[in-house]
Image (tube, rainbow, N blue to C red; front, side, top):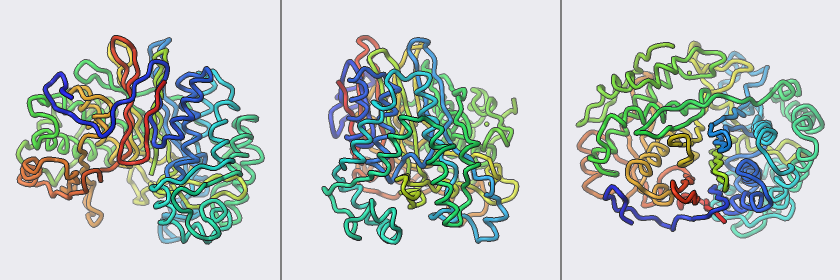
Amino acid sequence: MQSPHGITASAFRPSVMGRNGMVASGHALASQAGIQALMAGGNAVDAAIATAAALGVVEPAGSGVGGDGFILIYWAEIGEVSAVNATGPAPGAATRERYLADGGIPMKGIRSVSVPGLVDGWLLAHERYGALPLEKVFRPAISLCEDGFPVSHLLAEQIRGEHERFAADPHTRAVFTSDGEPIPTGSLLCNRNLGTTLRKIAQEGRKILYEGEIAREIAEFSRSRDGLLTEEDLGNYHAHWAEPIHVNYRGYEVYEMPPNSSGHILLQELNMVELFDLQGMGCNTAESVHMMVEAKKLAFADREKYMADPEWVDIPLEGMLSKSYAAEQAERIDKGRAAVDVAAGGPEAHEDTTCFCTADRAGNLVCILQSIQSGFGSSLIAGETGILLNNRMTYWHLEEGHPNCLMPGKRVRHTMNPVIVTKDGRPVLTCGTPGADTQVQTNLQLVTHMLDFGMTPQEAVAAPRWRSLQNPMESTIPHVCSNNLQVEDRFPEAVRKELARRGHELELVGDWGGPGSAQAIMVHPESGALIGGSDPRRDGYAVGY
């Protein structure tokens, strides 16, 4: 396909188009769950929650009831973007001193678990915007729990990687093994206890999960394993509405989640990218990739110095997102050489995952990032609840004085960042991806592919992808960054050679080995048709009607 800017783009799959609704998610069965909600008379929010619940079943390595997330909503009736922060804090007993005495925060197990906030966020969004009763919204997910679903090649591989832990615990053994062996591709996986939990939440609301029967069972499970999560931690938690942050990029308004999300990084990157002739450089050329990678390094340096839970830390967010600051930062980019020593700037002081997008006929858009942290979270199911608990505690820092240093009741710094773009108050697109620190880098590629180079959503998510790694693990100097740049083999050899000449240490990751599982939906500016794209690198599919 030839874009309006002369860029020849190709897609592994065609874009999906529909008039009445569109869902793009990390699994075909979850996308179908969202479409079922739309076809039953629901709107984009109903579809998003139906998709969210189903993903926790069919993509258990990435998200679920035991995790947390962010929700970004464009509501056409008022022409505004709103946001829900559904990230849970550290338990009240989770002190820095306790973890240091124990040798640090474990990657797995009950001491890696923070307060799960996701479901309260679903219910908060549904209370304001939902049109269907929760029983209908959760029905597809409950059916997947109780009737089972075929295990994909990707999920089978993930289960094999976690088999030792799963087989050793009776609750995970019952769900993720077949007579003690890893569930093979094509076999059915059931989690009937999770279906019961979802049915109870649909009938009784947040109280049963955070204050009632399920809360008591989670707390008792934690207590029995010497965990820190208590009934009090669950009862005190509430998701909340937040004010989105945004910048204007070439006439488009790009919305993101505010801190404790790292969404500001994408907005800072776009502010810097806007100062360069991206179209003149060309799409996925050495010039454009180099410039984006260097902008990314500057924005990440600011995150490391300034960003944490805004209720605990003063964040110079207005200065970080200002156009004048972007101009100062852009001046630091060497167009011919990759930087290694990248200190944070001085803004004026005035803050394994899954992603999916939904859209409806009225022009409403929803983008949700939800996560249980790394693959399968803590790898523990909380007793008979069927809930796979997160391991979000692993994102804390224990260095005293670090803005993201662990404190009881504080929310950790998150990488999740859903994206919505409008123009003149009208919806244009929504997109996002899982992938930890890769997220804002992939989102930068998606947004520029679609807005600057005219790609369709499917072309944008299928385009060759790069990833700039963060600080090398062995470095104790915060501003020293890695020049390791992962690129897919599909980048032309001439581009790879020029990037290497500029000082990037290239790592080839295969034709489709790039990070993330990107999803995107675009609204046609004239007809209002919905155009969806889903990343071919994983199990995702876009479904429309």
